[in-house]
Length: 123
Image (cartoon, rainbow, N blue to C red; front, side):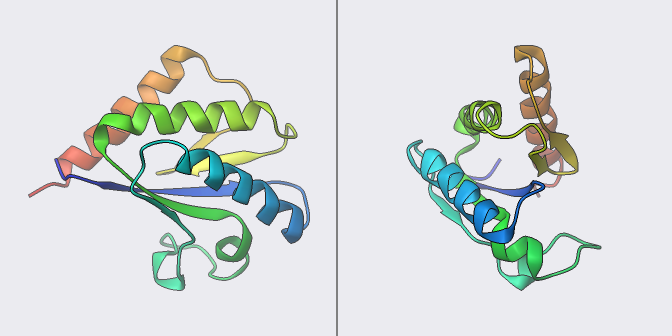
């Protein structure tokens, strides 16, 4: 396992770009309150395969650099943040979409799946 993971978060909502940017900025601030290494805006080179560069990258995407030991804390922040947003907000992590309320079991499964995927690609 590496010392730091890069988690891409794609946030979508039925709001204009300014509101989405503000919402994503609030999420960024909450993530920075954790012991994460960095929370950055992706560049065009960070676009997921098959996506359209531009709109999503401009307002609704973040790259979180984090130690594997606090991935669960990151997911807990995401779940808490989602609970305070309009019901049409979705966050995607590695193809898994989060929206609405998540149980502790669902959060644990997401963290386990993510870490298993990360560990499987390590040399």
